[in-house]
Length: 224
Image (cartoon, rainbow, N blue to C red; front, side, top):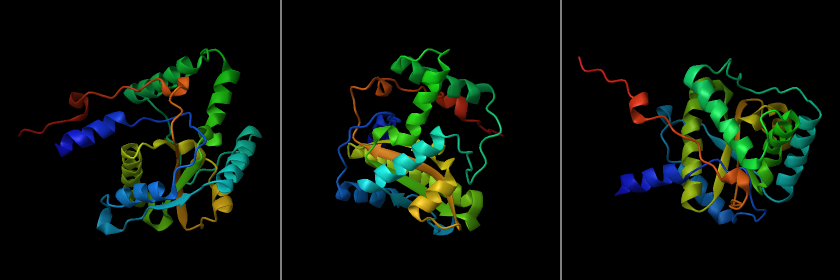
């Protein structure tokens, strides 16, 4: 059944945090975008755009981001960060972080180790490619919402083709740097990045999976 195929892909997909250096063939990258472009959007605006790095382009951006993050450059995202995480959202966020630290052997009290692991975001976890995802500023949050569907479809299409991904809001924290390095106009909102490549399946960072809320926790029925 097609439902089962989709469900299996959704369950198989995970956020990869360690990649092999092998590049993904250009044709495979095109196929990922070719599938993802079919997601719905308000008024069929299709606001998503992807700036995709490879080879020396990936290395140049990797070095620039690592330098900025390591030197304490102030974050300047195009979209405001969440004001706070409370309740179940805070618990899920905390659990994910602790699962990662446990997997790679970082003690909860090891602030330096946690900082070094956080900086791995800006090296794209050694991925050979990163996709910078952006949408028109004039469409505001609705363009961003539509583009979120594209991000989901992108990661699922990649999974179907044996390519691992990790969507990263952290990289969008340095929107001015990305805009200059990737020649992205001021009329675009930089929403996130997706690091992608072939997973290093033996790396401990890829050895855990996050939990999901139960269906009954998500649906609110209206009967009358």
